[in-house]
Length: 101
Image (cartoon, rainbow, N blue to C red; front, side):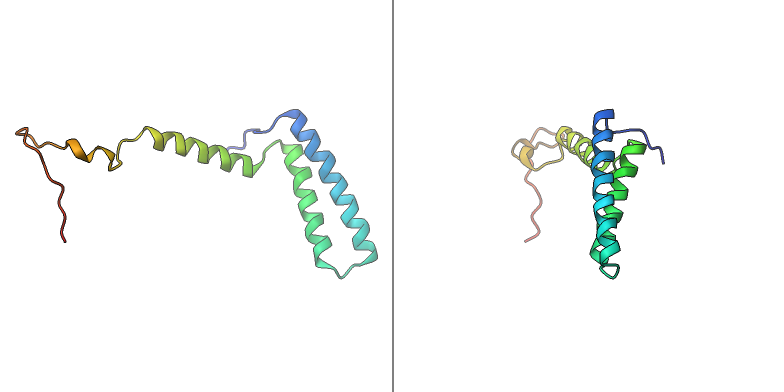
């Protein structure tokens, strides 16, 4: 898998800053209440944001870009049923679509 950076420098710095803030807040809460799993989950989310900023790769952004590319390719295809009115066969006669009902 090729991980090319898909976020900019400023976006990476913002992710690192917010991720470290979330991570420090959640670890301070974990010191007071060590049995709460929600603070551990928040700490993992903050650590993930820090890692995204350091690596400059966001999987959600990559997924969105791939979806946009698929939608652009789908827009160019002509496999829809909109053009069924003008169907003709090789003899030039009008062709009626097959309806099994």
